[in-house]
Length: 582
Image (cartoon, rainbow, N blue to C red):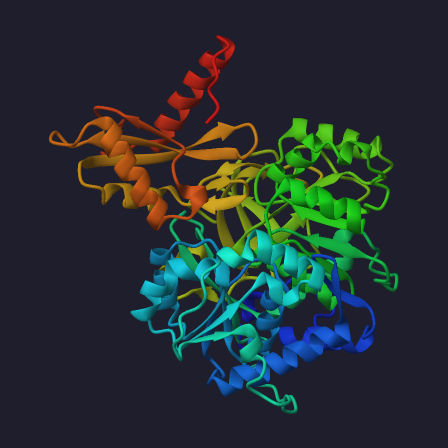
């Protein structure tokens, strides 16, 4: 095996599960051979069987070959949760390419950065989002843009309705050789060639973008093997005993977490498909749409973030819905407040569900989940127990010295899911993945908490500086860099402030230059710049101007003090009955 950490992977015991020596495509194809007539995907009421999906993937791979994609090439998938995204993901892997997963709402400047730093030559994007990128794409290295539409996979009735309400407002793709629409793209090859493996399971297969363990944006390199480890553990994660044959018949997952995120990509899509279940693709990250899907499709499993579960509680339709179909629910991407878990568990029980909301823990450097609360012994205010063949420990921050149970420290993870590394950043990789005295490679997560005497892990806070807005990672340093570019800004600091629905939103503290324009003008300029350069979740919802910012002893801006001061102020205002929501 060529995985850089494989020599340090399993020195303590034989793995409890057998992991397939397959690529992502091969793992899916094996599943399609076992369950050809079962439904693999549901999208807007339309069903696609495993056999049909495999045929679409093979055909798409043949068409990708026609436009020049080959082993080692990078393809950027900038799509919501639609069948196109699934098909492209496996088709690129079939050819030995690397999938660069990017948020579909990414601004042009940020997409340009991802294309440049990953050396991506191909882009798959939705027509509704293309117009804001065309100027940038003309100057980019992209050789071919495949333009997709939601209407490509809608029934005739829904297609007409979508066109009348939204579709007719979408600008057509430029009439240039660089651009090709999905329907025309599928006609490029008559039939797929016989499959031949182009790259092995240990080769880099996916780029995911995250904050790294320090909170600054990083591109994380992951292999097919990394994904397949968690996919193999899928039945046990959702609560099926390892010593029993798993039967996926009738089981389905709501795939609403976005596919540019490790949780959505691996647990919401790949794990479901490799195990013969049905993935219900939801392209819009909305509690209202999630509620409609639950009512119509009656899924078995839901994996979401606190924001969506809070939204479910407020949905009037679901208050009258039988939820006995639900078998397991998982919360990740952000901390699950105890009050929300209790309210949601009561909500489930009152509607016939026998399961509870189970919290887990993970990070992109290990694809996603590392620990989860077990089905029969979930515990409040814990992120559960490590999965099979995954070790976790708590160390004194800045060292590899393990602390005693109950003592706070930094989480470290040792697993077969450890990333290949950060793209073009060997120094950051070496700082994050370290070989300890026990001979094992451990990811220093940058997350702070403790392990209790029963082995359950309790997450407290992030050592790394990163925010979660509706479960989406936001990097304060990136927000600050964008604000600092605005003329008239001397200093800027971004923090997260509480929000009743989104859990957190961004607030920016800004120190103007002496000759800066008036505050209203400067605020408008900042918001305009942020709107163009940042994803919408990262745009500040509050801006406060001040004469100076608190500093640490070494002269750095003390964002921790700002967070504490802001929280104290909000608590006092809440006690006084004032509205402090963002």
